[in-house]
Image 1 (cartoon, rainbow, N blue to C red):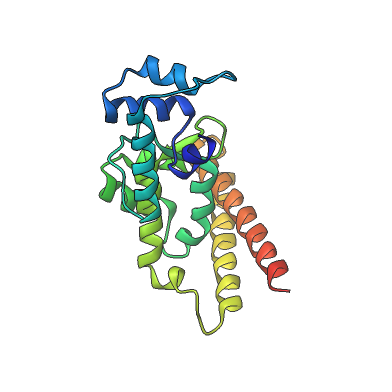
Image 2: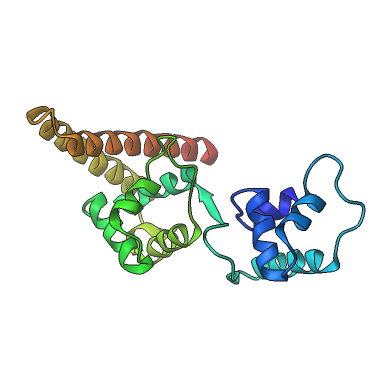
Length: 207
């Protein structure tokens, strides 16, 4: 059950039970009682097992599940880990939010929240995460693993983010009461820190 929950990107066991209920027609209470707690049921209805097997096989084939985003999502930390590479493909974070918004229908303001690891949200919708990864794959300067000078490209990416953070800090100093400018600077600072950590980890792995 733990493997299935994480492999299928369910937000929790309870969310997985609700999705199984929708897919099978079995009541949520029956499913939750059978699959929860230390003393789980010794036998369960066969539809539950078949439903999970079907979903896991689809996931292995890379196929999408017909399950609502209400039940599935990715940790916000995983969304944040995409930001450094996305910023190499877009001029501003707002441009990233608009691009994802255009393809998902979610508002840019909502997209912004999914990239803020501030403890207010634990999960981001799976559809938003999927679109962000698709955008990365379609951006040649980001998605190509074999570049002529990978280390130089990484350095340029760090420099671009650092320059944006410096400009944002300068603007914020001029208008310290502007909460939007403060958030922009802090987001860029956080992105720079994450990028440097990822670059350091990559360097260690290549040794």
